[in-house]
Length: 391
Image (cartoon, rainbow, N blue to C red; front, side):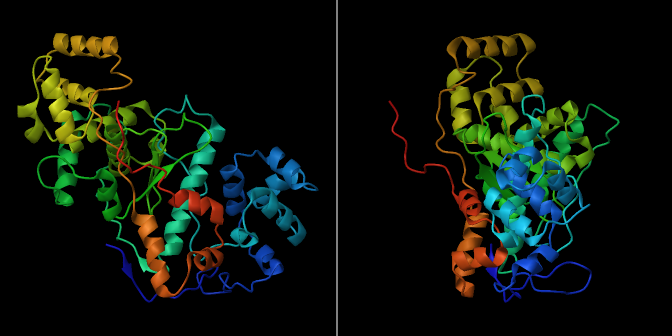
């Protein structure tokens, strides 16, 4: 539940003590330049998918060497330069002022499904988008009380590779901690949001960036792709990213083993062994698999893997099943459309509640210094919720 609180609607630079109010609409450009936050410049540049050289060219009268110095803290831009950067990056001038909280980690890392299939620039753009989501959540907390972060941690020993039994137990303990009843999980996105995790759907310039998460200490963010309209895949993605947040440290980003572990967690979390094992077929029974897909809201492929993992289906039958999936084209498009992916609501509802504090959306954005067009894109559900006509 999101609650309204009488919170002070001010924003101050973080020095350990309160200093100047940078939410003041009257803050002049010179004061913003004095409060310049280099991480905000880098975030805005990466949000636009620009290199330092490209930004220098877009801004004009600025060299790439100067942009580099601004971002690494070796120099501060003059007010006139900051104005040009603001125009080139399509962010308000006040966006560059330091926020009223300790800064996020210097290097933001995300658990991407496959680092080989995504370019560094694509990852940087996606990470910048997630940083913006975190910034929005922290700004909203000045107006409304978001759910407190309740994320159990069971970090796995990086020295070991096989954890199947432990992962099954961890998934069970997380369900118990969150008091999830036996059976299918009703809504994965809503479950994460109720536990204080920010969930967004994003659309960036490449389809190669799949779902990923960033474990910010204050507000972890799970980003689900908006261009893949499969409910079962989206739910598995959400559970996979939860596995990273629960079991893995940032230093393990990019490790193939942790990706396998997150997949095992997702399967165990969505399909607890004690519940689903008696229901799984030991032979190729497509009607039963389709019925289970509808009940558990997971893919037929995930059910087959679960049947093999739980020793319900033998190796030969399992191999035959995957051959059959390929022959029928079901590895790309399975039968049994489950409808549209689940829609995150936390940020949208929090924004709507800020109106009850006496501020319009435009006033909230102005006070926050965040780029309005990007925030509107971030809040756009980007999923057509109408019933789908099938042929």
